Length: 308
View 1 (cartoon, rainbow, N blue to C red):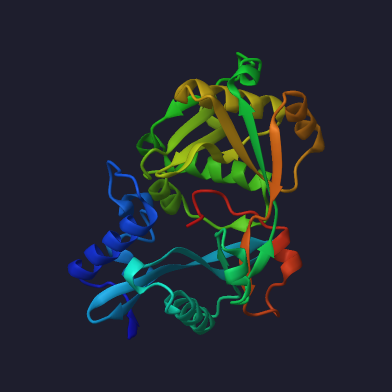
View 2 (view 1 turned 60 degrees about the vertical axis):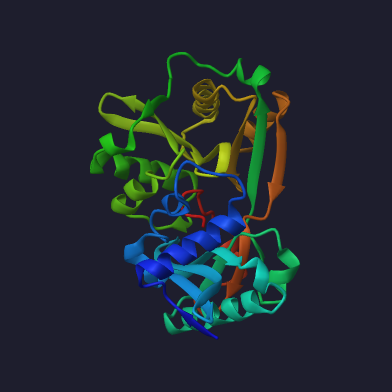
């Protein structure tokens, strides 16, 4: 039994086949690697950690080193995702071994914490993870959304490949306004993440400036969910929801939001009969408490394109 990176076409194919089999039960019109254009890119094989047995991949997890913008400093953390084990090898402790390996690797890379997303809270708690942060999930049905349009503040579908570096940077600044403690992301990374299949971008412009944006959909996940946005107030939020719903013709739209928001616009959605749920943002394992603590992580929000 050993753990390695998939650094050959054969191993990459094995990895993708395992992830597709275990994580995507329904046929998709694109490869699973397309859904994660950075962490599953063949050029970034070091982000993939594969457990091997008899020359076969029996378990996999990504470790994506990132920088968390926290107040005036950046702190190295690791995002864990695409955790999967082969059905024939389950119940043998492979995931536990793999997560332990990733924790050791994170220490080697001097990462302060590991963050992952999973419903298996009790399992990961036994491995040192605990819930951190908060997010709102606000779901509004089509009948209520019909009253959201402001007419003069439309958000228009925008092709990511048409965006300039200036526009991408404007969007990142808008996102930062809504959550100051979040992951650092370069314009190049942003442009790559926007190539995720079924990811739709709507932008609001004032002359040549991007004044607001909303991103809905992300491959197999986040269907009819606005999971990333840069919006300046309740009217723009409602307009973005309206325009996303018009684009998708969906029976409802869900808005993901940082857990610290203006209570006034929560009241607006309450009046619109929206379903408002508050959940932990993620699970985290603090590795170096001298660099970061749970209270700091509770103030952070990681947007949808970054989550793996």
